[in-house]
Image 1 (tube, one colour):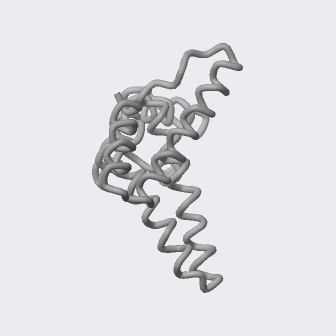
Image 2 (image 1 turned 135 degrees about the horizontal axis):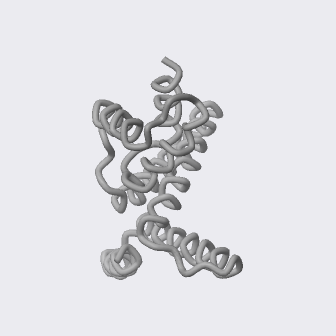
Length: 151
């Protein structure tokens, strides 16, 4: 489904002559194809929509890091370009959960897994990834899970 949406958006960007969006979507398609090739090499099927959300989040994180570096280096035009790419890619992610929603999801996942300490952190993160792929930043969530399990 996501693949079709992106391919349709490529066609629309071509018609609208929106170069930034077109180049970003082509890059997204290329990244998806590379991820599919990697999966096939490991004997796995092509990526599902849930897997693609993880790929998109990784792409966004890379661009956010680039924005920071460009801002520090005084390259405002490159930082603006990266921000535009982030906006295009973000359009294909589901709505991100608020911090309160993430806390509630973590509490529910801890109760569901019966997690009692840090040794159970992997189980909790696994449940969260299965249910909320693409909806939360797992880098931040893992810190919150750690705090919940140790506190």
